[in-house]
Image 1 (tube, rainbow, N blue to C red):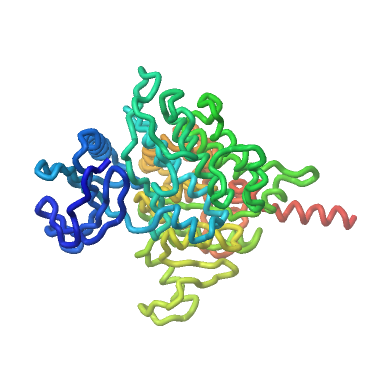
Image 2: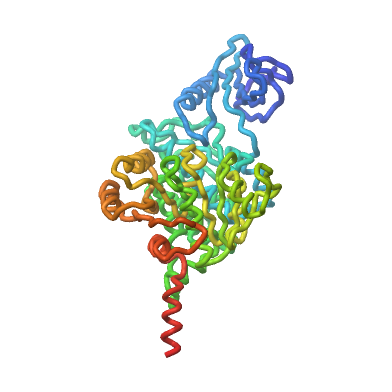
Length: 497
């Protein structure tokens, strides 16, 4: 515990570089301040101060060493660490994360956050847990709760406060220190065993239950199912129940296993008796996301995304095509043509329509999350050829990820390289599209990747227009997802006879 109050106040300078602006928060072990960088004007940092107690200093040093070794977009980045012996203070300087805690966000919705956000939130948390748990020396977070998760304006999760995280040691039977927040901590954190990856998964289950019950429950008790919101996907209940098993061996054993189960449950809902797979898929209550990623510039990602969007619009309804890049120009040029806007004069609206498809130009991830809460049956993301963290994450979490690349023998390594660079992520849903490729190129790539979902896209000069050959390929790619209008026509003709 802190033995004396912090001496820092507005204007105080720490480490001859960081000027304190305001207090961000405080707890039993530390205080956190926002500070401006005197050497980098305009740059802001979070400064965490811990004082006096030798045990606290030991924990802070351990936290600093751990965080310095980590690199993940959902974790704070440590930029400085130093001690001040005269005052007994230890300082940790890290990224200032703009946003609010998940707890504050939940309160803003009176406990009822939009149901379509819950699974994406869970997948974001699982992404960082998978990173921590699969390190050479696994890191166990041990305090997953709403107050330790920041939500940025772009609707991204960031884990904060590694004060009680620890490295897993296989030779230990129990933890030396029992810490965690009651209601979110796994039973073994109270003295019944050593914490491991499954302890964090229990906390994830508690967090999901908390979200699904409007903040009423974080522990599985008798009758709790009656408080789970009725509009939520029912496949979440068995996932949460398994996460919250009392004994670690009865839970999911890894974050990757939970990711696979969430995606599998969402993708393959059992068809009701008497309803075909195609009809059942079309009755799916949520929005399906198709992400189109080019492996290199000029690979045809935007052309393919447009063709896919208009194909889906012809076979279903309410399709949005999203240009997920704030500086891309393709949709702006298209909007100039569609709306007869003078060249170079941007429209005030980022949405326009072409043959029933709603185009959204130069959007952000926050826009995508907002669209997921709307009435679109499909959202197609044009990710271009950019492979930054933001676009890769959207590609990996999509319901139907499409990789577009050349089938030329000297270019196929681009596709293989992308697959290998992301090999720790499940790839069973990936589809590979090769514009103008030969059947031999398709066969060769299927063999290299050991993957069946490789398709050659025929010549299609106008992606806005229907093309029989392209439709045949997309029928195969989206089999069971959209209704086959030709089959319905044949059924109608049969009845007429």
